[in-house]
Image 1: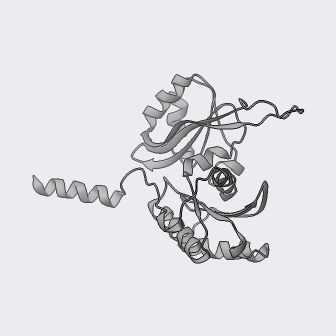
Image 2: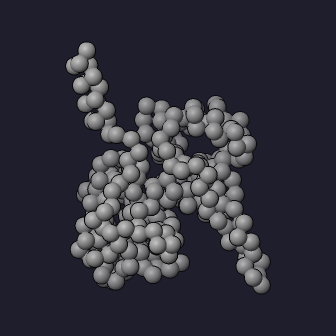
Image 3: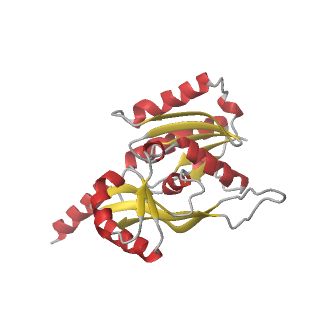
Length: 249
């Protein structure tokens, strides 16, 4: 099974091709360019470098939100356009799930945080367990990805309270870390750490790996039906509602 993955949910743009358990290619850029400038050229470059015919892929995994409204719209439109043109299904991978999956096998609490502004973050609470047990005849264990709390938009103070209630070590990653690191350090009563640079931002290879699992579980959708999950209204919509409210006073 071959999956093309796209993630443009945050500041990072990332494209990957994964075949079964092998990452064939990954192209990730976190720099001062818009995703509308980078995403399609990145897909084209990955296809050229790996001699990939896009018609040979089985599905397109896309980071489906939450995240940047503009970034999600660009990623969604790109995935939908390719899916419709190639007649391939889409795999909607929640952005925060994809981030957490990068810390594969970790038994601590995994807490990705994306800056949602106004002292809020997009986040979820995850861990891996080995409850599947050892594979028969070997000492190999199979970590199981557990979603302890589905992705949400939440105030940082409320997130800190929830994490303290778990009374377990926490590992953080995501673009919200540098923004709220001091608040986390001041409020947490449990042990915590921060993921290193090679796993602390969105990566399409993780979206592809989790998407491949969802594909095997039948969690796919027609390209025409894909919709990003924004979790909350955009700043422009909030400002419009506030203005309308003031005009009625």
